[in-house]
Amino acid sequence: MPHKRGRVAVVLNGNARQVTDQLVESFDQVVRSGDLFLSKSLDEAQSIAREIVDADYPVVLTGGGDGTFVQMVTSITKEAKARGQRPPCFGLLKLGTGNSLAWALGAGTSGEGVIADLERLSQQSTHRDFRLIEVQDLLTPFAGAGFDALGLQHFHEVRALVRHLPFIGKRATGAVSYAISIPTRTIPELAVRPRMRVRIVNRGSDITKLDRNGQRTGHPIPNGEVVFEGACIAALVSTIPYWGFGVKVFPFAENRPADRFCLRVVATHPLHVAAHMLSVWKGTYRHDGLLDFYADDVEFEFDERTAIEIGGDPAEMTRSMRAHLHPDPIKLIDYTTL
Image (cartoon, rainbow, N blue to C red):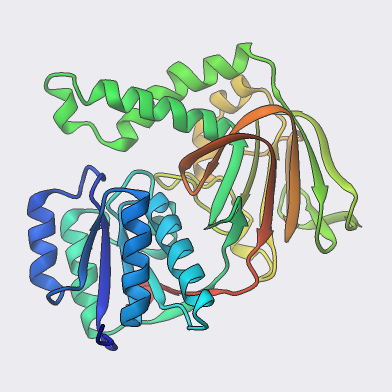
């Protein structure tokens, strides 16, 4: 296969609701022939990854949300490493649900915005080194267990129902489904069910605990020591401030050291979180049961099989989850500098 240096590969998730035939047609007019890929399954994604590495594309853009980004970056990075090649520079087009990275990177927020991103990229591109977390063999900017995984499950159930409603279904966005599912399904269920019990152990360098203002407090937690043990409603890791729809779940991520990710344990009552949802959204929510750390490698041990999410997509239920900072930064397009 001929090398395509100087070209941009665009990978769209064919299952994303915003990826319509009309949008694909618009993309096809912007990118060069053969540079647009449409993926509808994991097998197709892996095949596309091999083709992209074969062609040695310098830049790859993914469209379809955080989950699409996670799958493609993982597949392409591993394929390139197996061949002794340098991975391409990556970028994200906001065409899925949540899009935490799109918020962090300033990517377009509509079909027109995405096309504008492509056109700007064709003229110039700047990138920065970006750290991802390896969780269950996937490279991701964030992952977690508890509230977020349960909320994700409820979101998909509500969205499937809302889509079939007359009038509303055609206009409902992912944010609408979240606005319905979180207060009506997730919060009530968390309020009555036993809270998740987890033991979090440091498997890496010394872990720093943070106070309410994001400043270091107490003594470092060394390798092998327990970081947290007990009941909570969520245990999360991230290298970016946002979850989905601009919710600033990790307000201290912007100031984290480059060789650390954020670890947050939410040991508050779910009804207290619900009562302060606006401050949660803004990243200003504070509570003694909200515990924050900077870490680079932790292991989660659950009392029972627990639902987890990786990059906004549900993963298999598990009794343990390992999260460690991937040693090699990826090159990532930062649209705020374009």
